[in-house]
Image 1 (tube, rainbow over the protein chains, first blue to last red):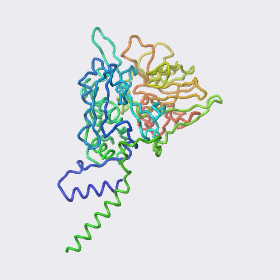
Image 2: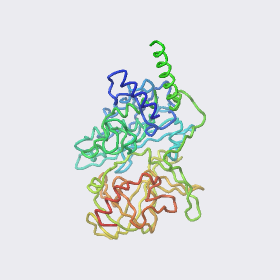
Image 3: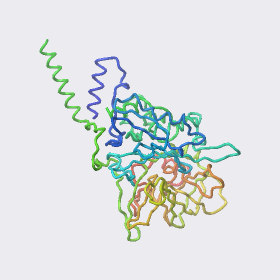
Image 4: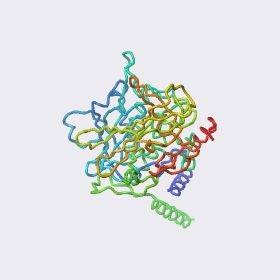
Length: 232
Length: 229
């Protein structure tokens, strides 16, 4: 894999003025194997259920489901809002629930018999998934007629409540597209977008703040490279 | 000259072919395989079957796909902790499970366990009682023939008699909570120096199912800061 990257990079440098970071390469360590079998012709349809809304999670938040479009020819995501005729169709679901005070969201893959995997170790996550359910944390608390959500409470000067909600949706959809959390390893990431040994990525865990600028609120070059590596 | 160009082109073609062999074949997008294909386990955190009281427990690790409020440095962990204490669990935890369909119990989306922790030393914060209740995101389901530990954070269960350093945070999104949870979850709990790197009976080391995830640098800074060595 590293050899392929080197050759591709060298050829790109020799043949054009393309900067190194724009060359499409990725890492086995940043993606899961297998496919999401439920999707036909690379069209990933996510149905947003009414439970997935609160005072921070709005219709605007879910427009970010389509953020992964126009990166790989083999990935097209589409957002649908729940209606009764969609209920029995095997689309990917985005639902809300109370996940407590310290969890933003979860992605739950299902096996071929339509059962959620009850463990998510690498052999399981590297298998084919038959559909996924994304759970977002809709917990909120009323402080004198003003709702505090997990997204407003944990917002920082570098990540507003809306940005945290939007980036959580992009992050969870990224998991559904088989992207993993990047590991902390400087030897793994060659390009210039490294901070504290992490690549700048929306797939990093945590919230963007002054000391965690590698946690991106938007899709980065690293994320684009991993998506293309996985699906192209 | 022409011959050289042809040789160079042939060489680059052969090199490209050779290198592309190193890449995993792209997966078919429309393939409807009958069974999942398990590939290699790179994390080394496969489910295990440790013994507890003679009964086998299956460890179901759900941490890879659960997204926490995570803190990456000791400073941010301390800043975001209301209480930092050392102490010991004085009972076994009680688990609660949240299912999408409580009747069929098909989709488990959350599990929480609370336990009482006796405080030996307060390193940060004020606490009047000598115990504190701690909540962690896991549950032990012993309803079936096989006991199952569902771990959403990858941390080991809270068992009576085990001693830890805890960085704790009070929940804010509920009225009068009577418990704390580990700050950032897996970043909020550390072994006492005498228990460091000693695997427990479940196969957890330093409280982690995947020992490689333990933040050794944060741990050594924490011990140094509070003179716990």
